[in-house]
Image (cartoon, rainbow, N blue to C red):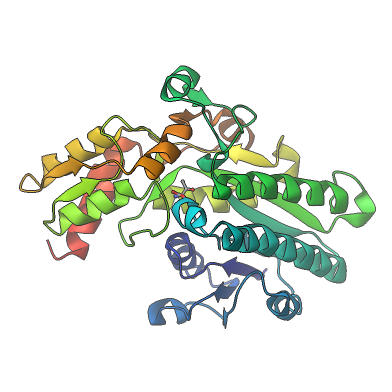
Length: 336
Ligand code: AKB
């Protein structure tokens, strides 16, 4: 049976990876939305390609005419960008999400089955009050330490709750008669892709360092050597989204799940990088605001709920992420 999926933020890092993966399925019709026109190689892989702002009601109206089965709402202003333009972040991250949730429930009501809404949330929803508190907390569970200090974290935490509310209000959790929306969220760690370099995030130091080194460039890291947050290889991030989307609803004990893979310090990432590209130097020039953001995020996540409910297990740990995915693929990308 064929299905129609909507991907917002299609031009972003995860959009690229998700489209590459879904385009391999002949039964999937992809509607891609981004603020900017899609890259040519990406545009060739999607059925419908729309340029637009996710907070624009005209876009919701246009998308609402399609019989969409699944929404992957990837468009967002990430943590560093959101600190630079908090009002804009609120508009895109919150108003855009609310508009797409309402659009999804209207589609669900029209076609008579629930639209599955996949929401990428983040470790930015956590807010530890000090480095000592962060160390003490270790791997945090979903309901612990949810006191975000950034606009982005606040937006994402609120939208998790908004989506969960809408799912109860318009989904089978509350009323069998109104089963039109099925909201599911994943809290992603920092994602590292071998194909793209992120912009606007605060976990960007890891991918920036790796991609710089592969091009023979030194890197000045904007957080301290001892800064630690969880990371994940991009293929695992995409796999997690697809796996959660496909999980039987009855198996889900929550609407929001942590997922983890590995949690190195910046120094541990640097040591892998310089171990492989010894001519490259990594130095540390912490940026006070970005450092404070990373210090407030958890050092690691407890993802036992995802492991138990929908058998989440990352393919890549730190060793294999570097040795079998990142280093070989990035080396090939920059021509050895
Ligand atoms: C960011 O740094 O803002 C994102 C995230 C951790 O959600 N990569």
